View 1: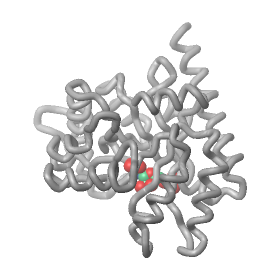
View 2 (view 1 turned 180 degrees about the vertical axis):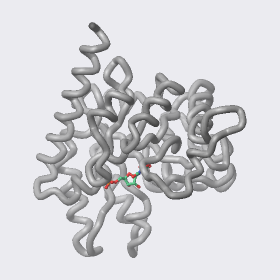
View 3 (view 1 turned 135 degrees about the horizontal axis):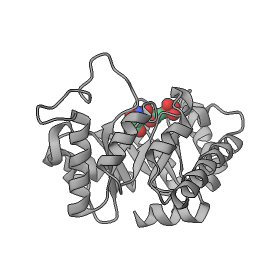
Length: 258
Ligand SMILES: O=C(O)c1cc(=O)[nH]c(=O)n1[C@@H]1O[C@H](COP(=O)(O)O)[C@@H](O)[C@H]1O
């Protein structure tokens, strides 16, 4: 959290560039290097998605090299959506933190807090899936609970409780449903949200930030993966998105003061 906060402040950015490498194995390493080097000045964090590495020969080595390439003051969120029980989760945590050197992970809370605790290490952070950006035909997250609210609310409550007990727990909340974002923000007023779904998935940036930003203009990391990866000029694409986010932060802060 300290690393994230100091990075956010140093570059005045809430942008997270997703590293979801698409393309032939032979070219992908150099494109990863380009995207990192060209966007690093504009980002608060990078988020490599594990699947895009594991689907390749020597994918783990590529992931290690990618994380090595990222300047040390930029937090790396390994998006593995890890979700197994405690002793198994402990091995995933060792992989994420010790083998490849990530600072944070994404975690699937379906198995409850057992699946989250192993990732809560000193100096590390876990972003728990609460309300994801996809809108499936058969949703679990929207299932109504007999005690009221939905399953996604329960994921949010668990993440808040663990954050209060231990610290280092954020949430994943998609950018495609601003009403749902508002609801999660009400349940978790202080925590950081990792927010995918703008760019290729078409999420509304303004509505997302209105719903998700904290009154201090912080608390949200806006992720974009394909839209940056596929841009002819990744640096310009990252700078532009960072600028758009900051315009909305200014409006939020001004509205909070007035
Ligand atoms: O945890 C995630 O990062 C995630 C959660 C979610 O609700 N939706 C979602 O798209 N993601 C990830 O965020 C990235 C989105 O990529 P783009 O749609 O290309 O910007 C992918 O790596 C997804 O796996």
